[in-house]
Length: 178
Image (cartoon, rainbow, N blue to C red; front, side, top):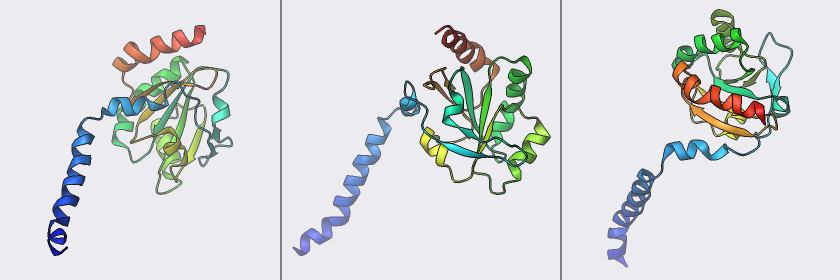
């Protein structure tokens, strides 16, 4: 029995190593797509400061829309934000925002006042309830949702002109025909 105790750390290390090696086989892009084809998860967020309306899953019914997860603390969000403003200016698709994990409830509204507000609706998600329901791993992430409230595409990272032209805009046009 004493000998087993000596080998116990090696056994535990071998088991953990097996899980670690199995992780290399997982494709993070496949994990990101788990919500595609599924209804938008249920959520009901309060509005950010300065807005009257919050944001909930039923707001996404009836039109193709883009849901963008952002935060004032997010450097990549600053990269994509001017392009989101351009999309809004052209009226190409309604963009709804989820302001995720702000330390101070004034940070998100202040950031939008400074950089512009491309969002039709913005919900405050300080406790990550909606972000967890969406399976968000970081900001920014965007979800293309059809008229029936089904997630049709998840984009991880900033929405860039290249992503828009090659992926999002063609999908939006296709989904509007359905």
